[in-house]
Image (cartoon, rainbow over all chains, first blue to last red; front, side):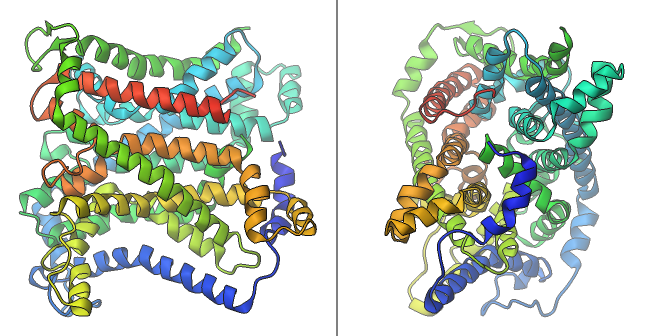
Length: 294
Length: 285
């Protein structure tokens, strides 16, 4: 198992590694295939954005136009005027941030416990944690719903975060990162200086975890913000929908008309795309690091 | 002494509350008949016997199996192929490709469903407009025809997952020591042979992780069939997770839904534990 530091040093040469030189025609074929794929990935999104600026009657006009003419903001205006979109937005963002904060903290603590301590029952506890990765959400959907509703906790600000606060995936990711990048000596030194166990974690370990915490935070935020099944069974008041649920109900209520929901889809995607683009390096490397070196 | 337990305690408290307790409740509930009000009525194993005879449930199991097979045998190989292409020496704009292919994973499933419903509308959608213009005919009934509906769900799953899985393979490929390839080349191995003798064995742990992850994800697929095809036409795209949802929240058969969920749990759990053991992942240290 390589340490994080020497991976960084050797990444550049490795990146250019792989199979030897490639013929000119091979190169052309590769670039055209990848570019075609790029278009397949981007085209649906461009079409959605374009449609969101078209008047209702033009969305299915033939021949299809990529640039809307006339372009209009009516879909956005009507959506925001007739639907409690900003309520949906607020509840989606705030509950996602709450869930993310709790999850990141819980995972960092447990990841540290597993990475840097020996204790009785460690193997079993780790195995139990890890095996929860293979529990399908559909299994706990019904009982979780009953527990939450029966215990009077169906307030969406609380209930929406419940499935996302203790992700085993995050603990695994943290544990891997701590094993690889935080030397025991730093922790020993803090202990000799008389720091308490929690003080060591808070002042010494946590700051060093920042890149990995960022990746986990982005990932958890996406999971919670984009979640659909749990809000679907939980929420019944239109003013307290999350964005995904609001868009779904609106689409069905409007007899599958696309004008408002396309505007909503674009607005809904702005925060996640922005967060992703800003933190893409951290996220992609953080996600793959645990699996590759695990 | 107690410090490690204090560090892992918050997780296990939440884990017991929101995972273990619900699973136990599901076990109890699965032995009852309950409409959500009043006292559950104990019925023994009747829910499970009913499931064994319920053709909807059989359809759901078959469809979810299909989603699993597509994920493991189509999406995963495509991701590996894509990663191999992105790993090409001296490739320009690698990050542009890598980031763009990941974007579907960032989008909400409802957004993806809306975009694809718009594109694949039978009468007026862009895809059918283009097909009609090119080949004539009436276009393809992407959502309304049972076989095409299955393919539509499969394609959306591919579109959504492939870029996500690619980043794991790409990171793994980048970590394969270069001298292994040089040694293989000296032995006269061509590109194909060194892929099988060097690449595949070297990235085996990541392949294992990716296979298990896609298996678990596909086995509990809900959003795509619910949002794009609503399980239809008929029950052509109904998944097990959708079956559970419908039993509980449309027909108020909470005991029956819990039983169906447990069947899914046992199958997914057993298969993924088996895969984990076979492929040796998930051990502390």
